Length: 240
Image (cartoon, rainbow, N blue to C red; front, side, top):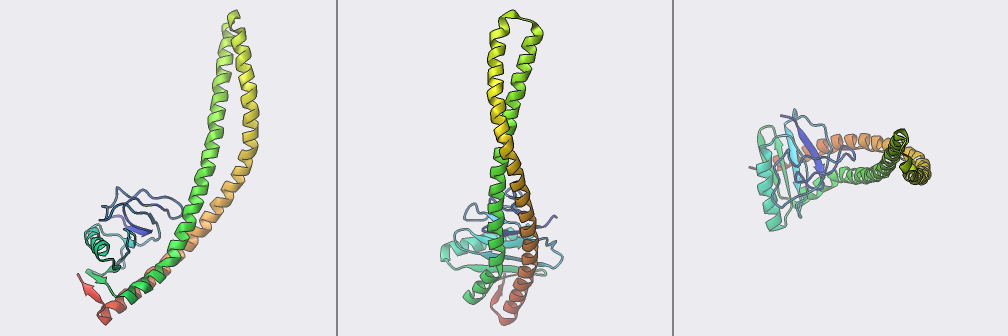
């Protein structure tokens, strides 16, 4: 089974992110949690070999998680219902074959502190993704304009080839439209070159954030595992 490691502002529901601003469409890959749709960021490359999974279940259907076993979603869904009804946030995790839940506020606060860097990086990646989407839209406008120019040129060529004397006025009108569109296309082309440079800059920024996200994920998962194991030893973790 392929792993589904995700850092969210909620998961799985409708997942937003990407390992960098790649916005993930995993909604069909995992069952929806109780409480409705939520949004998330890809954060890890966990393959499940460590046996550690976690879900920090917050209010308002927000869940930060790294889960690679489909069977876990039933437990997480039930716990999310508990959070929504009680208002008390929870930390769920597995170590090996055992599943646990922690309700202790101090442990929950520490878990929040651990995942916060991933959340901040995810927000930055999401904003870069939005900017890239806007650049793509503008590039699409130029492509559409070039398509219109090509269609008009084709029509002019067809009319000229037909040697239809009645087509002179139409050809003249089409040429007038072509001249206007060509001027517009030239102006867009100049802006396009600037957009291309901006796109490259955003791509470099995305790569940088991606590297930072991977590093933050490894650190967070190590810290969360230590927190989980400490909670088991101290009796703050209840076995499910």
